[in-house]
Image 1 (cartoon, one colour):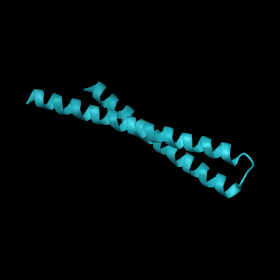
Image 2 (cartoon, rainbow, N blue to C red):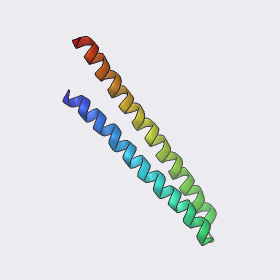
Image 3 (cartoon, rainbow, N blue to C red):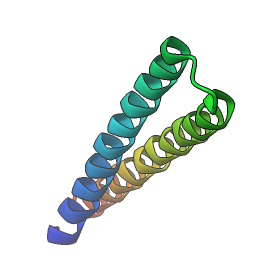
Length: 80
């Protein structure tokens, strides 16, 4: 059961980290548009890639939580 809790914690931590990454990338995109720097295209590309990476991290972490939920359901069904 302790391992299941660790799995859930890993999933939640991954989602939180991913959401922070999304917020940072979104902020970077807004700041690039406001600043109008010379390397804006390069910075924008980096921010968009970071945004997509963070999105995928959230999706993967949600799948980890789903698997933990399924394991818990299977354990409860087995005990019943």
